[in-house]
Amino acid sequence: MGYQDLREWLIAVNELGELRQVEGAHWRLEMGTITELSGKRKKAPALLFDHIPDYPPGFRLLSGALLTAPRLAVTLGLPVTPSDRELVSALEGLPTQWETRAKDFPPVTTSHSPVKDNVLRDSQVDLLRFPAPLWHEDDGGRYIGTGSAVITQDPDTGQINLGTYRIMIHNQNTAGLYVSPGKHGRIHYEKYHAQGKPCPVAVSLGHDPLLLVAAGLEVPPGISEYQYAGAIKGAPLRVVPGEVTGLPIPADAELVIEGWCPPGQSLPEGPFGEWTGYYASGQRPAPVIQVEAIYYRNDPIILGCPPNRPPHDYTYMRTVLRSAMLKEALAKAGVPDVRGVWAHEAGGSRLILVVAIKQRYPGHARQAGFVASQCHVGAYLGRYVIVVDDDIDPSNTNDVLWALATRSDPEKDIDIIRRTWSSALDPMIKTGVSAFFNSRAIIDACRPFEWLAEFPKVSQSSPELAQKVAQKWRELLAD
Ligand SMILES: Cc1cc2nc3c(=O)[nH]c(=O)nc-3n(C[C@H](O)[C@H](O)[C@H](O)COP(=O)(O)O)c2cc1C
Image 1 (cartoon, helix red, strand yellow):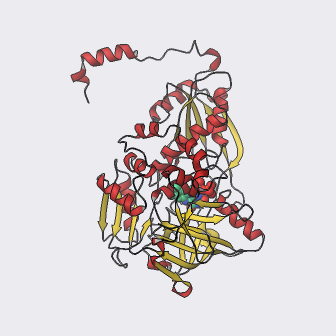
Image 2 (cartoon, protein in one colour):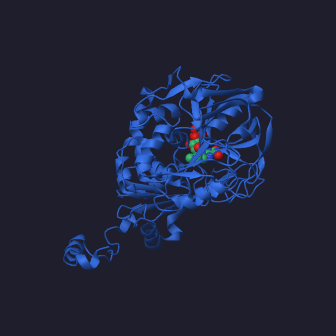
């Protein structure tokens, strides 16, 4: 593995020519808007903001970390691949390997912990010492945590979980925590609260982007993200116990807060420009973290990863990795001959899933669609699953729409699953409801199995003819 921590990651990315330093951008909307506009460009660089007004030079923020194939490859310890296609094929089989090997990589406790260069306790705690951005014009506050890793422990099993959940600053020592129903961090604090106890919490706010990958993805249940990240890295992660709760915090993190999420305490949280492209959940009461300690390296770097109208700061990373994970989850659930999966960025990598199969038997397409919509990787806040034949590239929107338009009959080929897993973030759910359900449409856009052989032939030159003509007319047909 080529790097140890975020600082070495920055060196590696700089060597690729994919890092831009930005000086003087304001935390109030400017860093957010630059991140949004830059991120929409092809080959968007990672942005390292410094000399942020109101803050000492050296107190920095990184955004746009995982927007290209080379940077994602570096993060995953893979050979640097220039194209998405090569990265997708390099990932073939890896999620299953990571899952299997995770048990061999428990984190190791170390005494050398750069994150403890500076320790603020109790009355010294001040979240406003760090350049938390106001990312979007209608945000209800400054979000210090967007690329965060929130560390909690299951009080029943002792399992440590890392989840990326947004963190808003309420005041110097109080942070708001938004976790959707069913996410592990929420299950953990609900278990403590049911016993009338405060939930211990630590939040890493700047770290190796690999930790964001692990904390922000559907790591299979029962596996700690520390171990999953260790399996990806091929080396155990280094942790150090927090002084307040004893939770293991990443020793090489840049900035960590630690404290308690007490039962019965909440404050208005949001609105926030969310991953669906809306301020959908508005402002609601959400749990808080009473922060009792802050640890940070000299010249700390916050890892920012703000969503907005997709594609945004984390759709690329999630699309590539969730597609790979979903493909393997389908195989594990016994769905054969899945040839490709794509979790489209337009749907924030959740709302539109496309699965390409080689149809083998009647019902195969529906099986693939229903399992994709409900397995762990695909279940939360989906909307449409489209199943296509294997001549369709699931990542090619035009191909998929063509299959939808020509191989499905709405009357027969759309199945609806009702009362499925959603959240307050769903823009189709009005604010104020008490439980968040939506539905799934499973669209079978494969040629009908019973007349596969007679289905009209595709009007397209045969590969032999196309190659022969392209060869002869190569100058005319060159890009
Ligand atoms: C950049 C980023 C931000 C996210 N923000 C939130 C959030 O604010 N709340 C939330 O519940 N999930 C959020 N998620 C999704 C969860 O991190 C994701 O579903 C993860 O798998 C949850 O882990 P868990 O299953 O251990 O709870 C975010 C993901 C990413 C990548």
